[in-house]
Length: 558
Image 1 (cartoon, rainbow, N blue to C red):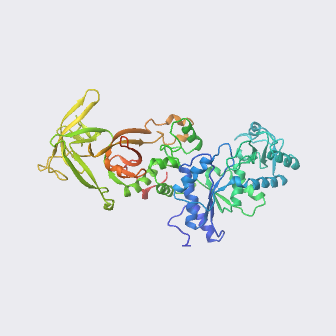
Image 2 (image 1 turned 30 degrees about the vertical axis):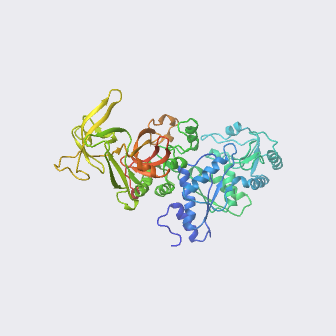
Image 3 (image 1 turned 120 degrees about the vertical axis):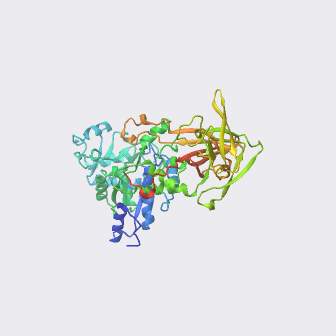
């Protein structure tokens, strides 16, 4: 038992562990079966983590199989992006990439076997009539007039469908289940339909395509999958999954197990709704950092390891839950706080002029790049006559609790000297322009000799030691916790989901690479996305804030 038991296990792992202990299976075989009709999102990350993680724990095999049964929506670009996302998350699949479309010949023959057994039939109703005959939640469906069609006739018509002799939408293959099922989709479900469209993988070989429910279970059986894991919305399809495998001539009988899908507060994981956001240009593209696609999270600055940790934290259950966004943010924060250097930046700058030092004065101040991890080395700040501070750090008329710079008050420049604001010069059009200050000598990391009160510590950069920076401040795309609950979800788009500031940052940032992550003190964790050397501008995406209110050991789903 100790060979299999991890430190903590979810209910799926308990089922697998039980099967191993009773020797039901010698080898665990799972699969991740995305349809290549879009980009992966955080919900898919959970499925990837679960299927690939299980075989890492129990020394099994996980297949990557594209369930590509709908040529209308599928494309090779999605295949490539899905592979990229899986690799970025830190997983690899077993041997070659698999495609359900590679099984089309076998699937066609299995369907013929079901026709011969009288278990399926070719229906000539139109799509509109099929929907009408199926009834409603309150009214049972009625049998198609073609339900008892002669087996030989169904075989001929099915061959005609394959040979391109049937009109699209005028012929389909249906299973004989029942028209009184409480689940409408299980009322004689369609197994095959006619589509005259080129398939990205098989080309023009086929003009009939199997439905997902027909393909998925048989593909699992062909690949000898032991545990077919899917989210709860496929629970109703389990009846057809088992029915098909019981009635075709195949040795392997995989079992389907369901778990709750991952829902994230203030986000949408519906592929259909995400498509609307992209096509209406509410977001830039599928990799927009404001949507929870894996490519969007990667562009924002998340790491594959932080996404895996998030999936571990929310765990796997059958209980539907809407996970708090700060659970995801805590995972990346816990990682970045350890290995990112600290830098100072001024997001909304105002000039500060030190009147009691010369224009040529330059003093290099050596500081550590990380307060506790000394191995990360040191960096140098430039202290000069002209500095910049954030506008939020100065008030001409402060309130009583204000603890930053104001006229006549002293504050400390972080890692440097104490200064006092003496006068200000205003621009008629732009308002406040320059603040003239004096600095107090001999206060470098020391209190003033007279022990005068210091009204806080503020951040700064020097005009001789900074570069221009574009700060892209990403926030929640939706201003309500559950936008999926509303049909008119577009009405809840936040106008503050992206705010761009042009500010200044330490020139030290030019020494690090694009894609590196840093902690901008007081502002958050940022990812360096681009550098424009023509005007020495650096672009920084904010990954998350510095809020540490949620610690990972205490994370619980709602």
